[in-house]
Image (cartoon, rainbow, N blue to C red):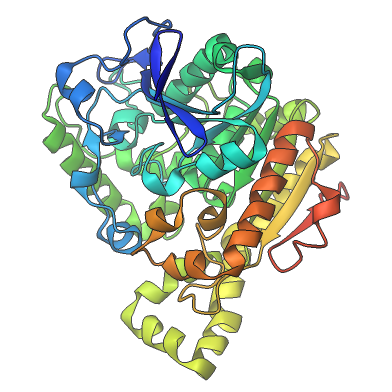
Length: 447
């Protein structure tokens, strides 16, 4: 069964209506996005090829062998195109123009270089149908296409400008889908959470959202990004009219060149300070203080973030499988590195916001199936929040979805996120039931 909103065709399934591949902007290579008004065709894709291709639209990218192995993704699973500025709107079946539902805008992770907004593991159908909210999934430019920047005239932060353009589209048109444009919450994981933290201080974005949920954002790493970017820019530039394949290969060249910088080198692309729409390095903390009081924040990380990556090393993988040595590895390596890379920077970030008068709640996600090979690692909360058992099958997180307890905990997880989107606070009546899943604390404003 189909329905339409603003001329876009929606597909009904499993209690939700999906309006997919809606084009929110267009952009020439290395140029800012140009907004696209609501249109009347039943399919928002611009070309016959895209209209016929039902795969998730994605920015051209180099597939990481590591992520492909962990998540069972392949280049063939995405429709990679530079013409990638699209979004999907997923609504409850009975949503209409008078519904005024909370809107949750999803920003995907992937180190600003991989992924797409609407891949199956990010399917929000349960979140939408259970919690009576609207979810918008955004795809934007990544890697060299979205964050190259150069003194020769290629603007920095094009990917961030894409996200702002998508939010402008949401503000202008979401009411037609049953959403409340004054009740928009951004939520995103990893680089997606980092992008949201920077949208908080982006010039011209203050009116576009009310709340944010920042999941496992590498805010400590991103503070050193300008130095990494300068290293990348010291390399020669590819021609602006190079083929897509050449640019993707060049992106890999940059990633290798800055890898020696350790954790900071893992994010060679991303928002850059001192270039529109972001403030300079010297004023960024003041900008976060200025926005703190107007934006409700839920921010946190999983208990064992680095448990996703460290066991990828052959020696450590063997140790992790050993009952006794695995526990030692968790205690002596995974938990300390999680605190250094994620826990401490996120705690300090949340305290700065709270000190400036912000309504800030911190969380630590704690649950994993007894059969899990990763523990509560990076991305593990997404198993309960988004996707389905089928979507996560074959991934490193499959055991979490197969655990009977995951059904109950998934409902709790989704209820917490949706309650925050509605109210700016945590569902206190659910916290006792959630103790094995997630722990919440109010951010302290102590100096």
